[in-house]
Image 1 (cartoon, one colour):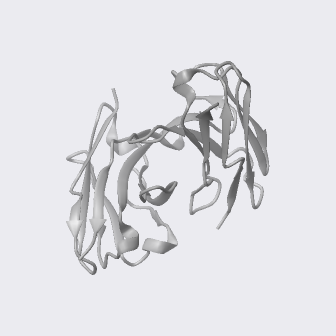
Image 2 (tube, chains in turn orange, purple):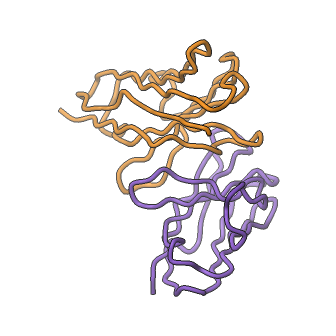
Amino acid sequence: EVLLVESGGGLVQPGGSLRLSCGASGFTFTSYYMNWVRQSPGKGPEWVSDISGSGGTTHYADFVKGRFTISRDNSKNMLYLQMNSLTAEDTAVYYCAKEYNAVPLGHWGQGTLVTVSP
Amino acid sequence: DIQMTQSPSSLSASVGDRVTITCRASQAIRDNLGWFQQKPGKAPKRLIYLASTLQSGVPSRFSGSGSGAEFTLTISSLQPEDFATYYCLQFNIYPWTFGQGTKVEIK
């Protein structure tokens, strides 16, 4: 069974940094693209970033370019999102998600809440 | 970025009704579209991918159709557990983009 468990969320001040983690199990981690998707309170989901199985290819939404960095440690089956220069607009539940049948976002974790506030 | 426009934004329906939700892309996206269901406090769950392929374990009352720039999600006979918000997603060109959602409520 595919299991994705996010952690690392919390309260952070504007301008601060946070690193989210996603632990993966139940599948061959290195074989799959992984994604981060966020959802602000009361809004729809927003795709944030993805990374190839090897970690050699990444893509980002424009609103996080230069501030967020996606990475993975295939030896530990872990996905990360380093978030810098956070603003109130980054307040959201952050989900990690895995492709399934070669299509993005087939399996999702339960999410971790990031709150950016003074 | 590709804009995804869903309609309606919300609808009220009764158990047993046939429900159709439409998603239009601002440019052609072939069949690179997925449909997701989300219930309050839960992560989105993918129902359909590649416009019309049912995800494993999803009831057959859900179906998707369309290609190019116009797509539909149909629930053939609405069940109590189907009251939720539905989103489309295009994954043809980065950045992937979601529609704004359609909330299906009980009439």
